[in-house]
Length: 331
Image 1: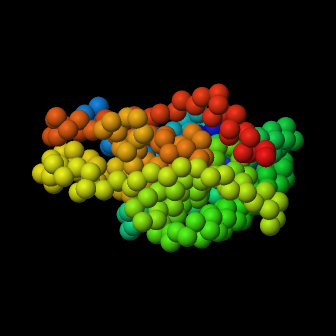
Image 2 (image 1 turned 90 degrees about the vertical axis):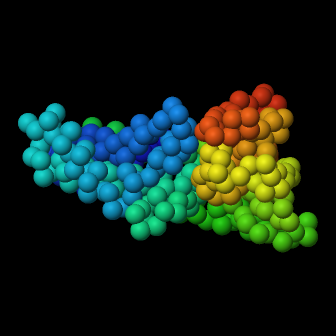
């Protein structure tokens, strides 16, 4: 989730469980504590750009790390709040706030190492966008009312709303997935793998990517009213195969291992970026739900196969694509 909403959710949970006279301080602690989990973005290397991808949402977001992360947050915050609250109470509110970090991130599609070190798989339920203004504004309202009245009731209402909203996201995800399967069946395709994820800022328009017979098919699904859905046909692109596409790259080369690392991060959804030679992209993400132009990728320099690849993002969107997005969202 975006870092502000991450803090807002932590503040809501901490405030909801606070004593009335602790509401304001609990909100501050609950807001700050989960932000510490995202300190893993500082783990990076100029020589190895993929280290950032491997480290983000890793051990700091794991369930096992929650007590440790809360303790670190408490030690940092207590110095500023020691005149207002005892350390035990600071730790309690930090624990409540920090515990939301991994959970909320797992609700998005990016992937979070919730079960580290027992399991290295990335958990991604894909039931809410990385940024959702309705979700964020509801939390802001609950926190502000609670702080002004010094009562936890509004935060508890905000928690109920958050749970209901996430459950709605799960229902919408299931519906969008059903429409994607139906679309594949109409095409006569056998789905080998399928991902469905919400487009930015809403629970109505979803991106569907499925693999069938060596191709990825990308569509947008608008899951509107019950029993009412619409599929916007996108494009298709050939799935990347390192042995077929790069026979000259061997396992002894650094570039080979970097491709393997990026493939693990992208859950295998790799394609050649259209119009960008030597760029492998993660087709799970794009600015437009129907597009096969990935949001990020790695640039290979095959002239220097023992140097690390370059990671880059491609976030530009044209006016035509922006209009197409809103047309699908509101159509």
